[in-house]
Length: 151
Image (spheres, rainbow, N blue to C red):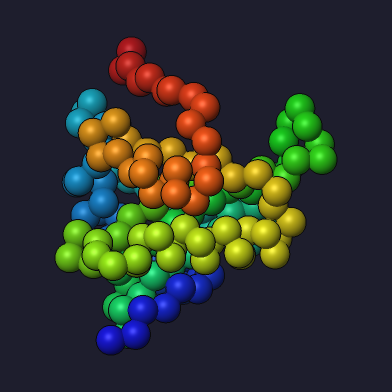
């Protein structure tokens, strides 16, 4: 069983990505638990990817999609010499969360982002599913807290 990491075009993998994203949102979505309906704007995701400001890195076991990490990219609005990549979401199927699969997904995505000229990455973790140890081992620094409220 070979594990591979590669950039893919969302339009080419949409059905299998959607299946995995549904499982992902069932597991972690605060927004869904607040009563919002799951309905991704895939045309916008695809357009952003075509514009080169959105990237999808996948993780496959043989040909099966078992994980992904998605970033938006662009010049920082206040620091123009900073090309920022902000993680939108990441996921590894529960039965594939062993060994270094997740760790390698992050390191491979860093390589891809660096090739794209990114020089700062911002990544998050849930308070109830905390992956801080992985990020700290990759030399990320904790710097901010986020709060959410439905109004």
